[in-house]
Image 1 (cartoon, one colour):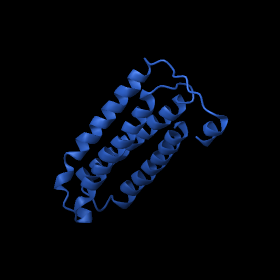
Image 2 (cartoon, one colour):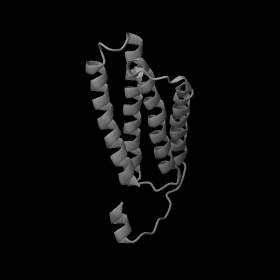
Image 3 (tube, one colour):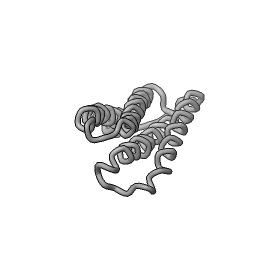
Image 4 (cartoon, one colour):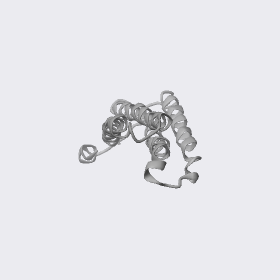
Length: 141
C-alpha cells in the first residue's frame, strides 16, 4: 500500500507540474484571467495533495494504522473531483462543453480533502497494527 501512495503522489505531482506549465503557457492567451485563476487553483490543490499522498506513503513505512490508507484514498478522490472539475470548468468554453452538472462535484472533492485530513489526524491517535506477512508478499508491495 505504501508504494501505491508513493507512486500516486509522485505521478500526481508530476502531472500537476505539467498541467500547471501547460495552463500558464499554453492556455494563457485562450482563457480569461478568471478562468486561468480557476485552473491554477486546481493545479495548486492537486500539488498540495500529491505531497500529502507522498507523506502517507512515507508514514506507512513507519506506522501501520487502518486510517492512514483511507486518508490517502480520500486525498486521491479529492484530487480527481476537486482539481479535475476545476480544470473542466476553467476550459469548458474552450472545449465547448456543457458542464452545468459539474458544479456540485467541486465541493464534493473539497469534502474529500477535508475528510482525508481528518483521517490523517485521527491516524496519529491509533496504535500501530501488527501485520504479519510473508516476505514474498511484503516484497510485492
